[in-house]
Amino acid sequence: MKNPFEDGPNYVGLSGIELTDASSELAAGRIEITEHHQQPYGVVHGGVYCTLAETLASAGGALWAMEQGLAGAVGISNKTDFLRATTDGVLIGEATPIYRGRTQQLWQVNITREDDGKLVAQSQVRLQNVNSTEF
Image (cartoon, rainbow, N blue to C red; front, side, top):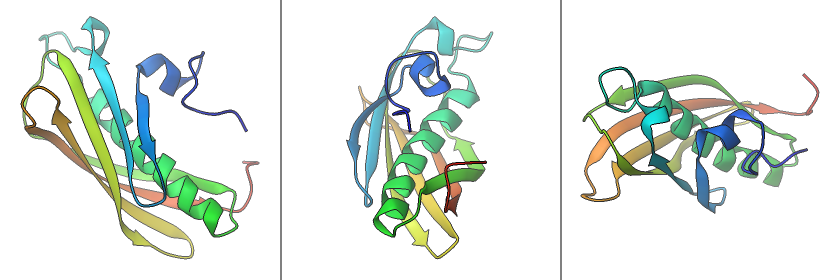
């Protein structure tokens, strides 16, 4: 299976997300905001926060699932609250598990601005544990 964090023509690679830490207990990453991440009003598009949250939760969740002998985990729900507008700089995301069960997991993701440490978005991402990489 291809590493989703490699640069290349996949969604995560094109988004600019950089994975900085990954374990079954914590997945962290960063994204440097460019004009490509902004919506027409000049602030970060909400989809950027959702993408960062699901990417990090999925990374940590997949590692945990593989430790359980499964193939991985995929996102099935993403609820993201946008708390503060951001226009530029670097966003930092940290995903931690809330619940991990036989068929599903729930992860919380906090997204902060690197320059002032303020929380800008918070997500809950539900994952489905999968037994096979064939869909």
